[in-house]
Image 1 (cartoon, rainbow, N blue to C red):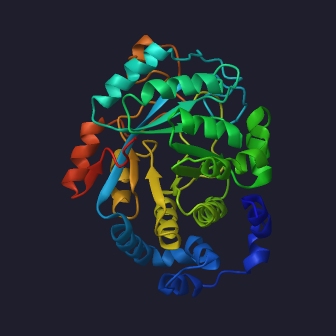
Image 2 (tube, rainbow, N blue to C red; image 1 turned 45 degrees about the vertical axis):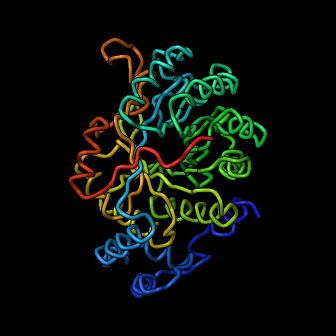
Length: 368
């Protein structure tokens, strides 16, 4: 069974499960191994009454499975060329922005600056253009980066099984790919044209990556495109599917909220801070082994508050500009993919974590 089959089975959530009563969240909190309906109950409106209890249980489970550790990483943008017209993204092919692709020499300059901070985990990103950022170019960049980092994850366009295997052979060990929106109709409206318009090919990409040798796979929904409760429900189901099918793969989830970017796009579904807390707690209770990331899209103080609830991974010293670690903003005409809120550097994030009694993890994987 593919995840698409599972999605189709639960697409009509109300028909599949019936109404959630006020007692259901309480039952879910007391369940030894919460099931799918329990997860739905924890995401429901009635569960807001139990938010404090959910946060406490989520905190305890996170300590049990991860201890007081937070893995740190930073993104490295290689290119902003894109063939898609995603209505919410600053890299949209129709946006009149300066386009750039780093040379291997520029990639090495970025690597040296990042590695000097102590970070050993890096996330490589490009816009989605097979012409301007072909697989051969990405493999060339990975070949440079593996001299500086123990773990290299990629966040690029969806690939075939064979192509993911090529990336693993080149030195990449992690895949990050967001479905953005799980609802098919919403997905179609948000991705009107370009290769990303293929919903099913995108949806099956995490499984292709996991089956091709990626050590860790991170998925996500872009919160704000649709009703967050049902999107997080499908995100959780997707993560469970991957955990069950690929038990040796570390599965993680990211919870990005829409941020301002180039273009004209109004966020259709605002997601509150309380909703973010409920989301993290529900995911942790449902999937205790799930890695949960929170990005620099969120404000510094709010990120700190979320750590104790269930976060296990954070970005630090982030830039969403191409070459943003070495090229000052005032020296480039390129625009970021989105605006970040937490601008602290790696030492600033590490200091904050240590003051809170957490251990910042810069390396948890040894490349052989």
